[in-house]
Image (cartoon, rainbow, N blue to C red):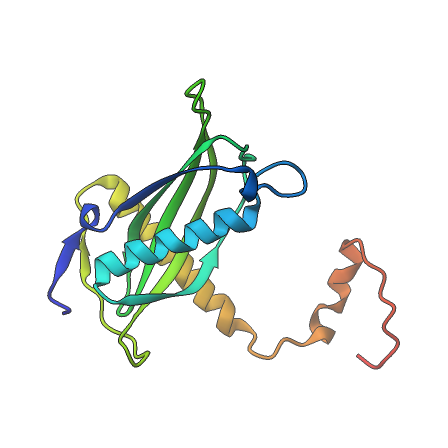
Length: 183
């Protein structure tokens, strides 16, 4: 499958859902966990549509809830394949909420889900490449590649985290160390 490349538009997915009182948290806003569940669903749909395989969530990067979502608002999630590796894909997701009475829209969050294509035995499957045909697509691909490279560098910088090397950093935080054992 390595010779196959697809346009990003072929795999894009958009879903909209009206926010109901059953989605509400104790603060009267839409529960963040519910929105995360919708984001995971659309990431799965987009990745599976691109790869033609079952896909699993490997990681989620940077979920910042920028604006609260109200009951009665129409939430729209847009997903796009931003990057592909051999078996993995980075799916960019944008969440917007719209007041259906006024038409006012607000950006609620953006996030990046890394999805991995699997066969029926759970073995990673190679995914199609991407055809990048706009500056936006090139920018998203390169930014995702950079995020992944940075993540890999951090992962291997210190395989066995040693408290002794970092204990002094605690003085810059709002903590009291009550631990009395040997560090």
